[in-house]
Length: 136
Image (cartoon, rainbow, N blue to C red; front, side, top):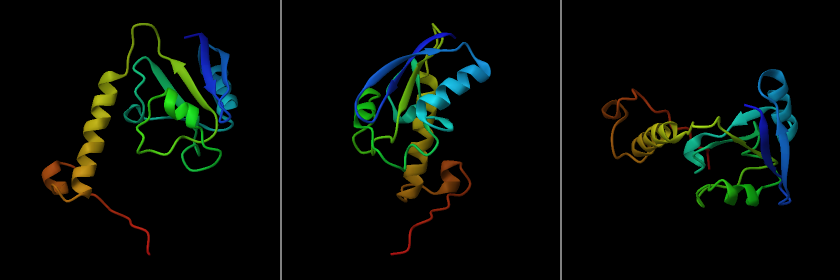
């Protein structure tokens, strides 16, 4: 799909940029927008039904934080804001990501239930969950 997409900068500026139809040109436009390698944010972490959210692949653990993007994409307050520029890209007309979000929320909910000891990994149907904790 060609058209436009939005880039939310860490300083709060919102830029509208052209969106190439596909292929390398599209990938290059997104990479330039987020300042490096592009990673699609899982739908479970934002509320946009008709848009995808892209961040730099390091965009969840580096500075500067992007609180404006955090608010615009509807991230839950329990999560830290994404870092660096955030690209918000429309899906093709008539498409939405509700089913993908529901699937991801069920999956992450299952992982949380196992991690909290509410159900065993075997009973949850995931086989095993490896919990790696930092040494204190």
